[in-house]
Image 1 (cartoon, rainbow, N blue to C red):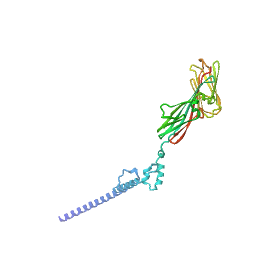
Image 2: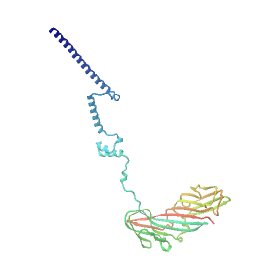
Image 3: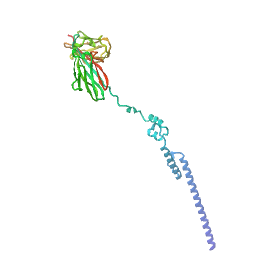
Image 4: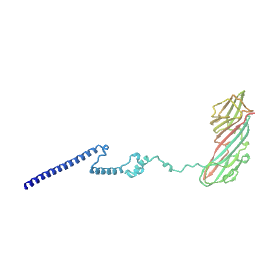
Amino acid sequence: MQIMKLIYQGQMQRVGGQQDQSNQQNKQQSSKSLQQQNNRQINLLDYGENFTSIEVSKIQIQQAQNSNEEQSRTNSIQVKPKLQQNANDLLDLDDRPSHQIQVQIEQSSGPDLSFLNLSPLKQNEPCLKMLEKMVIAQKDGRLKELKIFGQIALDGDFTFDDQSNLQLLGQYWQDNYGCQRRITPNSLDLQQLNENSYKMVIKNANYKVPKGIIDYIIPTKAFTQQRIPVIFLYRLECVQSFASYCLQYKVNDQWQAPLQDIIIEVNLEKDVEFDDLKTIPVAQNVNDKQITWKAKQLLQQQKGKLILNLIGIKKQGPQILNHIRISLKANTSVIENMDSIMFYNSQEYKCQKKLSVEYKIYPNS
């Protein structure tokens, strides 16, 4: 029995040893397999984003986190590209001298708008104006009516309250020449000191349009034919259904100032009907029964003519022409030695002269 027991124990020890050896071999194989798998995972990660589904070891995860944190800290202090920089970036991150930084700020922070704070808007200088209008009515080559009236006015920005003095210069202001004048109604508080002098109180005001202070009328006895800027004459030729108008003009030999903004309008009767019309030179505008020529200026002693031809006239009343209207301007006055000056805020202001002339020529008898 003892012999059999010993034999049984020996067999069991051999079986146990074999199992231990087998277990140990399994452990070694399992450990080797894990190591190979780890090695394989590391190799796969080296290939990049195509293998992101592969699990990595804790060591690699920790290394990756550390790397990301390091990268994040690095990114937070990186200077932005130049196109994205602004003034705050440069001030916070740039260690250059302040004058160099300021130059770069001006170059990279958009358009320079500093001019907006340089000075207030420019004001219109105070000025004194003489605004005159001449109205001439003409028929059969003769003056039918002549009126000349004007106004002395203030214009611009008057920024100081001041008691000013207005003086009228020239003999034609005197009563014996018949010049009629008055203080403009509802204007400033003017007081006449003597025949050609006024006192007025100017308060802080901005006149965007001229503010009249004196109205006047120049009598016809102070006016001569030589003071008419331009002489106009017209003639008409009619043959059956054809009519030709010729308007001749000539700047007066005695007129010295340039004439500007000339507009000549020929107005036909409303009941006139025709097939066609032609103008020489070509008119700027033809609107139904109104034909218009324009010119920027007329020089001294300049002359010329305008021609209007009506073709195929079908219907007409006693007249084809209703009237001719002519307007022009000049920087002068009708009577050269009529003048005025103003003293304001210890300065002298000479008047600026503006003349507007309007002709109306009626059909010849």
